[in-house]
Image (cartoon, rainbow, N blue to C red; front, side):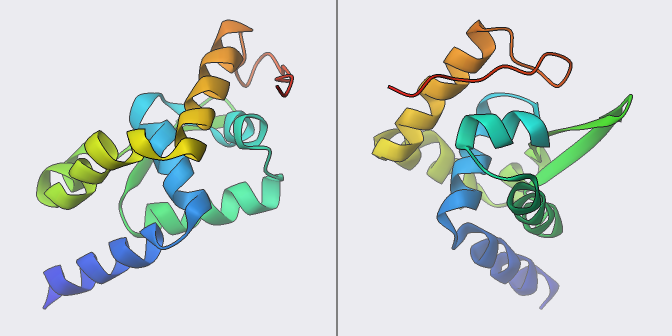
Length: 124
């Protein structure tokens, strides 16, 4: 029964486009909330709310460094629930918005974007 409840929590977390987009980015890079805000053009409140839901579903984990918390996917959850890994490995690469997000991530990193250095990604 416990495992079924975990699957239900994961599916609930995945039932939101923004959370899928966040998970897709965190699958490729370790990021903090301020990074996600810039890449996805979210406000801090929305970004934090989505991060909380992903943490509750054990899809991501965070590590505190100085005043920032850096998030990444939870590899243990991906190993335990292969359907999540398949989604990240195979399906999201075909989603246009996820492709755009990865381009924005690359631009952000190329500009030196990180918590310590705030950068703005030009649209277009």
